[in-house]
Length: 254
Image 1 (cartoon, rainbow, N blue to C red):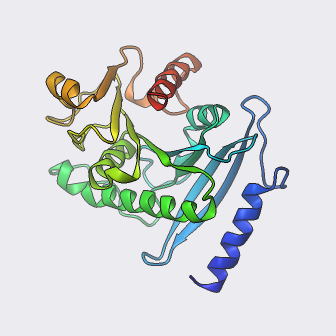
Image 2: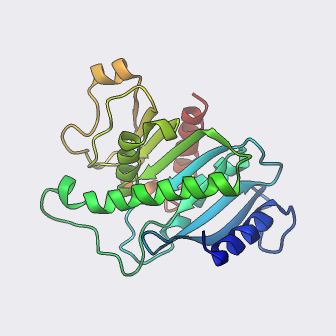
């Protein structure tokens, strides 16, 4: 690792572990701390912006949640648009990492052709972002519970989440999608798989397991009749987001 990278991560460890560092933004309501910074993947020459939502209390052995946002047209800040979910999970003791998957100079997400094929490069890039984030934070915070890593992704981020579950099942305990529509859910029992479905769009053919497959692999699919696809980030109403959080916590405790 380069000297500047070592210095950066040494500083990052100090910032995360100090209880009252000046960069922490303490939320009185949720009792969480929020940190924003960039990881850097030398191999891909790529910046990976990350927001940490951390419990105020001791985070030793905290379970890990990695959040992947829906498509934001490369305008940035999408990784901050799920704060109603990420802050709630942090307030319940989870160490939450929300990743910005799109950078301004990235190719825009494909909107035509066979979307399973044309969007695959975007999903594979997201999988690499998640993999790199896990690898780096295992070194930065070895005290967290890395046997209990949970992925949550909305829409396009849910497609990334399910691709990660298919490619690296041994690295995570659970994968949860919020109304993803393109990437087929793996038909496996491990990791545990869940999906909350919005009321306004159907997933593509074979993306969701059949009732028999759900039973065989203990996969949980929940239809939310009063919540649309676009209601699953901070644009949702307090009642809608409370309902989503209720299900997420049930899944995470399953």
